[in-house]
Image 1 (cartoon, one colour):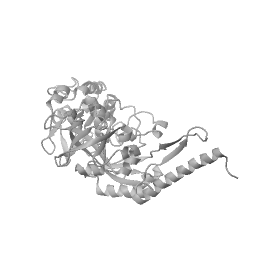
Image 2: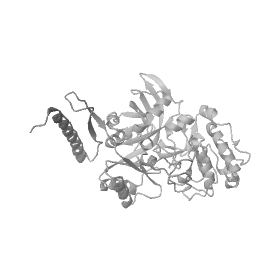
Image 3: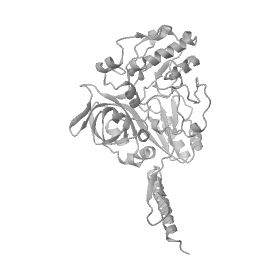
Image 4: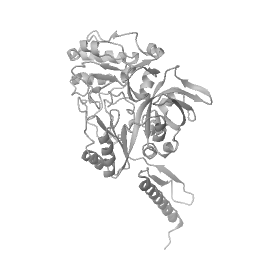
Amino acid sequence: MPFPPRLQLARSHRRAAVLSIAAVLATSAVGAVAAPALVDTIDGPATAGARVTAVEVLGDIVTVSDVGELDTANLYGALAAARDAGGVGTAGRGVTIGMTRITRAGSIVQQAPSGFRLPMSVTALHPSAIAAVSGRGISGALGPTVVVMGERTAGLRGAQAGDLIDLVAADGGVHTLTISRIGTEDEVGGTELLMTLEAADRLGITTNTQVVIYGFPSRVELDTALDNRGVSGRFRTRVRHSWDPPSPDGNLGLARTKELLGEFAYQIVGAESIVQEAAWQSANLPAGRELLSPQIPIRARCHNRIATDLRAALADVAAAGLAGAIDVTNANTYGGCHYPRFNRIGGELGFLSRHSWGMALDTNTVSNCQGCVPQMNCDVVRIFRRHNFAWGGNFLVPDGMHFEWVGERRDQMSYPSTYCPNLVQAMTESVAAADSRSVLFVTDAPAIDHDH
């Protein structure tokens, strides 16, 4: 018996959806990539006039990265784990690149001072990975000479789709690309510029810094596969899930850092040294080291924006009877805030330290060497978190000397920190509903020694 007309229409919609998904899967089988599925939905009852809307459903994402270049064992281990779990893995690249100007129809939108450049965080991925992470609209807007810019960084400089951006390549040459689209923070994963690997190749961005895994049916099976392949738990290796809850010691992305503390232009003058433009320094930093606390007499040159929070944190440490936990002599000799430096990863490309912004205080450096088990008093750590600082003891490479300003309280986050977890009640439903897609790539261009 034939179906009534309305039921026939609804049945045809469902069949179209199945055929669409089947076509996607067939394509991925040939190209070894998995694209996000399209699900056909029907608004209202299935009548002859019903609208059919294609809704893109983006699945879970996992990234595997090291500090700087991705270790070969992690690269192939993560790719194998993705296959083991029925998903797809592709290599990606993240770095800081210099931008000299943005123009629109021949007029300058923004330009760095002569001989200087502005730091821009870049994430480069295979088009299939971009489709899985950001959606087909973003993936389709990219190509060998075009980029997508995040809306936060676009807002800082008044950039628009269609503008031209000049970027300094690894060999020092300047390449002009087109900003094809402004993406949301979710779409770009918190980076400033999203591009394809082909575009990255043109700029000399050739170092693999991560593997992006997607299209897997089970979170548990993927984590098990990463364990079995020896990827999880390795020193200097981070596995980040799009469903992870926020960490109290997570870094800010470069665009958010600029939004809060200003954007400076810089020159590279050595393997690690940079020169910052004088205008930014005079507007944002004191002339020299200042006394931060009479009770804990650290003298440091810190960004003006963080000074109030830093003084309040030190005052609370003293009030709690913990002044002795801060090695003042060490801080005044080897620590401090402002220390602009650059770590090269290849030619003119690399990573800027957060100390370049004067946004982080180092103290107790001898007992808290980088990579060592941190020895900082946990009550001191929690006081600093209460006053808008993250702590380096839980960074990818433990950095217990390091307190980094993030502009928001971090003492109320329940998170399974390795060292000095916050003393708050564990979250339940909020953890299950966590979605950190908007910060997946915020540390693609980290300070090489301060990546969480």
